[in-house]
Image: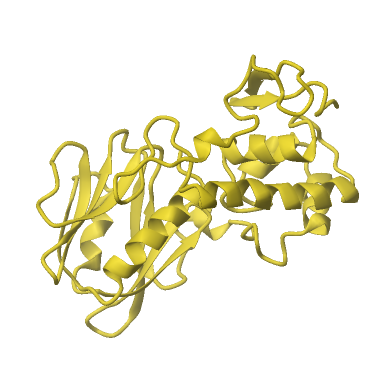
Length: 270
């Protein structure tokens, strides 16, 4: 699933192509997950934001009211601005722009979702409405994270993935951040000192993803169709059975709360 760096990469690419453009037409797959795409017709794009793993396309309706076209890419979603009609295979939604181009949304596995709401009205989207702070927000600090862990009985990695302690972190960057911080992913306790360090490494792992255009392991490509390069920079994720790059111990891999997890039994001892 695209995580914060992948979604932010796409946002940055789409922003100059969409701002100032009007949605003059639209179409969608018949599923109610995608039909809200039609509600954006007539809207003029005034901005594109990211919240966690969501893209929020701010637009102004013909009646001058403010709205958001909200897109979650799911596991295999891809957005692209095209000069020609998009291929029909796996096309779930599209928007015709006033310059003749088309914004297309392809999604092989159909885990993506589209909403169109009044600006800020996220009550019907619980996973967006309940998101925690962004990783670079001042609110996301060691005190916040340590307090969050103290109030929970869940494994630390699972807390990171739940999106309430911090928004945008998924399986790849959680493994990377925990390895960098030398913290075991299954721990249920976190001192303030280690929480401070983990906040730093969450940001470090995500920044690496941003700097390298995201991580492509299977499906992810950016809006220009290019793969990311961060898969070549990973220290831990997906390297189970290989030596730890810090101490040489063989990295272990197992399911933790239904998510494949890799860690070093020496550097990240419990």
